[in-house]
Amino acid sequence: MTDVFTDLKWRGLIHQATDEQHLQKWLSEGCRTLYIGFDPTADSLHVGSLLQLMMLRRFQRAGHRPIALVGGATGMIGDPSGKNDERNLLSLDALHANVLGMEQQMRSFLDFDCGKTSAALVNNADWMRNFSYLDFLRDVGKHFPVNVMMNKDSVKSRLQRDDGGISFTEFSYMLLQAYDFVHLSAEFDCELQCGGSDQWGNITAGIDLARRLRGQQLYGITCPLLTKADGSKMGKTESGTIWLAADRTSPYQFYQYWINVTDEDVGKCLRVLTELSQEEIEALDCATAERADQREAQKRLAEELTKLVHGAEGYAVATQATRIFFGEEISDLSDSELLQIFSDVPSETLERSRIEGEGLTVIDGLIATGLVKSKGEARRAIEQGGAYVNNRRVTELAAMLTAKDLASESVIVLRRGKRNYALLRLSS
Image 1 (spheres, helix red, strand yellow):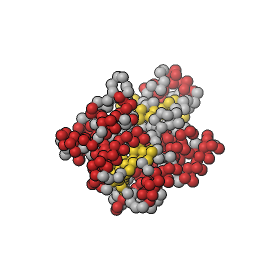
Image 2: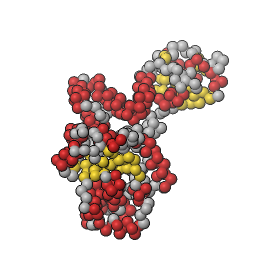
Image 3: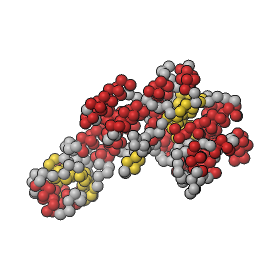
Image 4: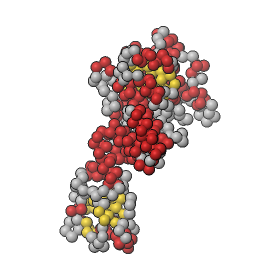
């Protein structure tokens, strides 16, 4: 049995624990069952969820049984923890779609067929739908002292606001999550709940409820939230959230996010998000300190996470896209591969007949895609060596675009300067 607690401590993944010394001994004594809950606010998980998925994965690889709980019931209310405003309530159809999307992603992180440590995937809607309002108040609500709930940080911070406070709906969230812990302890012998540091109040509420209802001792661990050195959330960019779904954030965009992590943050990310050994991470720390310009740690981080989330194929696409964006000649790709690489690049669609026969001039192609505004500007770009077709420099003002210039079935890639790309898409 691997000493998972010591590893979590070294990686900086223990923020709070109910009893550190006892937990470490308890975890070393045999296979334990733990769970982490995920809020289904979208049909994909995001970088903020990655740390929690890796927590479950670490425990499973250390010989314990993980449960991933999707909050089909609690997601209808929304967790007030760490939130300044009331959440918009999701429709049942939207919630169902979100749960299905998250379930599919979780299966790529956890092993659901490995004997006694097989992961379980549960949805709290499956047991909460059996409760009537009155039954829940009678059987669960009576065990929650309101004064204790009012002192939880997630509630207290909202009550101190002058412009909204907290609704009874969100106030009740704590009861539902607490009951999840009690239910899982009864059905799966689950005795440990983990979560982000903002979940401490909800976790201890479940521990209190198990003691009051069943006289049972449960345990809790929280890990720090995934933040940058400046305190802002990891996984956010100017263009939005970094998702784990390829159709929301392409493998190339995902890879590039980690390549661009700062030197101040890369060591932490290697520790909390990867399974690299202590020796390798410390060697990468030294590389960052001694030759930061080579970005060895960032490249290793991007490789590990892209392979984990998008597989070896996604990593290959991401690295190929990186080479292409740095000038590698483009040829023999499929439309899907090319459009994935250039998912954020502007494009213009023309009839395929425009490149048949003598073809279309490169000058007209540059104008059509918006890379230049006039023929004069296009000529200057070519004369100055700044016009490219599929990353091959154009040297002749009279150069033509023909079917031979297709980089895939229906796309020609044009470029002006070092980084200004556009796609010329040909319709049949």
